[in-house]
Image (cartoon, rainbow, N blue to C red; front, side, top):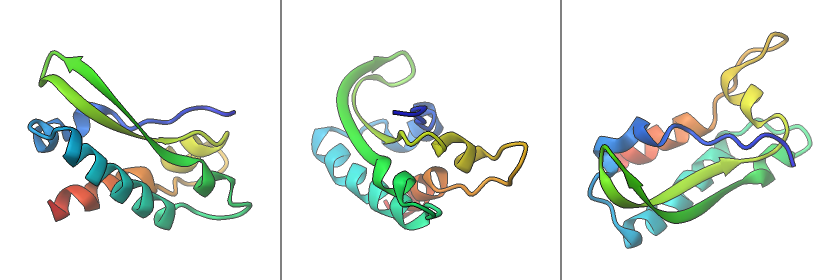
Length: 104
């Protein structure tokens, strides 16, 4: 497996402060679906690597909260999202998260 890329969970802390287990399981699949739609496709490896993982965490900023992590673990996931020296970024995770939050 390649590098695991997970957007910063505090990026959307205000929007998800009161989200519980049911909401995490509603939002997680929506972000995964949009990220897969936005992901650039060559071999399909990146798109297939996008998934959600769920767990309870205790964050100083928001307290105990149930977290839906959207993960892309293809080897080229991070360079596609943020760019690299030989190519421009083709973001797919951050736009998906922003779009779902805007829909809330």
